Amino acid sequence: MYRELENRLADSVVENVEIKLIRASKYSIRHSTELEISKIRELASSIQQHGLLQPILVRPVEDELEVVAGHRRLQACKSLRWRTIPCIIKELNDKEAYEIQLVENIQRQTLDPIEEAEAFSKYVMEYGWGGVTELARRIGKSEEYVSHRIQLLRLPESIKQEINMGRLSVSHALELVNLSPSVQEKMVNAIIQNSLSVKAVRELKRLRSFEVEEGESYIKDKSTYINEKRIRILKKTIIALKLTLYRLDSLIEETKKTLEPNDAVTITNTLMYIRLTVHNLIDEAIKAKHHT
Image (cartoon, rainbow, N blue to C red; front, side, top):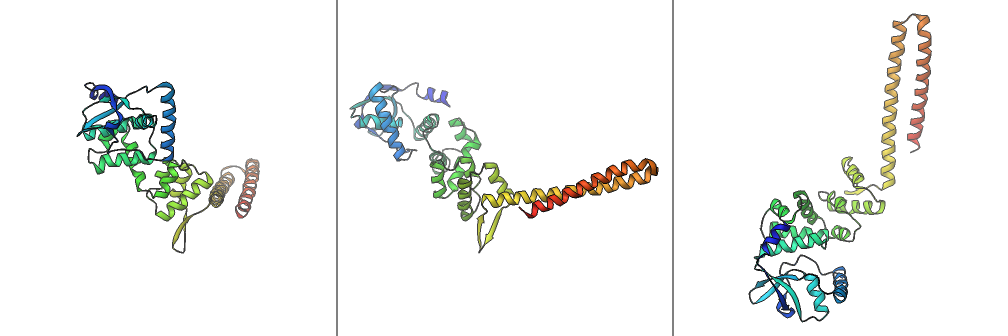
């Protein structure tokens, strides 16, 4: 993709352009947030000290120039009251401009997951410029990466905010996509409050660890989940020990049938001792289960 961009820009023109002639992109993919404003301030400070190290990319649109790549640089230079700014001027159609904007932001890691999701969705669905496969190739990402990002848009706004705040990872969020809204909300609370891993979330879903109370689903808290897991393990332990008892009984019976009485005594006594030990272990496991 980056080589394609270089080829696209091969016949471009570089010159200083009056900032007042440059307008914002109609396909802007970043939200105006406090964090974004802070980043622009930081960039303005850097430009003031070191100058603008890289021109912005613009394209002719009607009687103006539209910024394609370098929105932050443009805003930073505006805040410094620059009259002109170095520009790479290139003829680009809407699709090409959008793709370049996407690649630049992904490469610089300036988009949050939801901004990426919205940008991908617009490319594929709203603008109809291509499918997931083509978009993935254009931006140098896997098809799975693109499709997973788009899936995030199915989540409610409250969960999207948790993702952008960094309290919920994309991997966690993707596990919630197909759940009902009420379960999603309670699952998010459980993940955040108990620091559940993605594996733990998947286990909750696999075991269907949801209960219904007054017609509404809710997720058990971590301590309840852990206790149930312990009980389940202890139950399996008891079953395994009981199977061992049955096998020991079979071996004792076999010893009595196949060996002479004098020869069988020693082995039988050993097997009976092991059987008693296993029986005691079963009792201990049962007690542990009742106290969990």
